[in-house]
Image (spheres, rainbow, N blue to C red):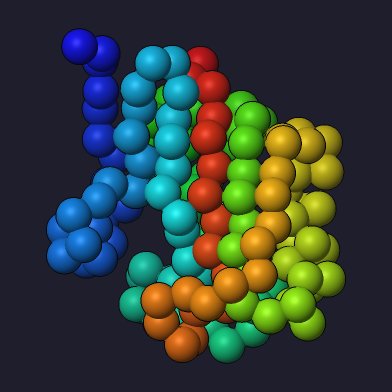
Length: 127
């Protein structure tokens, strides 16, 4: 059996859907797909760039809770609902990951709620 620790962001979706914001296991932090909700106000901005920044800030906080950081991210997957959003998402990703440059994939797809335009999941090394 491996050591395993769960990290919660306090999102009401975690308990309802039965998942953790992140799981620490085997020297890595696995952060679940994270959308652009502002959890302070429980609102979703309409702007895809703002959603991307919110998602990355939620991920950043989860990594910090786990004892890791964005600088430790080794893998990222980005889900975007429209090709027209790619450039705006790239611009925000560049602000966060330009020097870190994790292995990454972007997928154009539907997400579970209409207002969601981007979802991001990452894996980071545990310090």
